Image: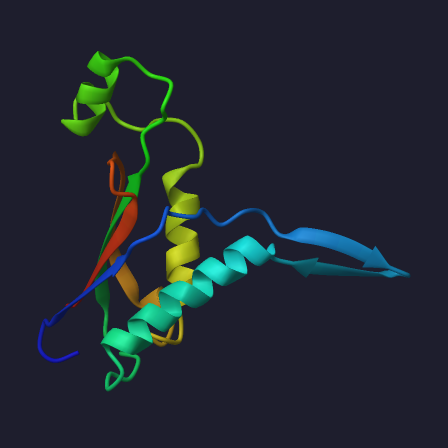
Length: 142
């Protein structure tokens, strides 16, 4: 990324939250692992970044990250409530938590778009209803 260049990335898939790791015990050792669903999602995010920004090496500069998670609207709601959700009058306050969505995205881009997510000094994140579920990510060097 050049001087204050903004990297924009859109993941055209329903946003996926980072779940708690699953643990199995084999003998006296515990093994933590991620579900196939979240591993696939993270690979998709990293792959999409590499496709669009193939020539960019991971930056080491401080970063601002702005992430918008567009969630699908449930089918079993009234037309009035649907209109409220589409016009931003009603927000998705139910689970999953926004920080779990953020964790999945930052883990996927760690070592790909930036050397380490400790470089992120400003973070904006929000959940929004939409008929077009997706995740929009903007990364800006400070």
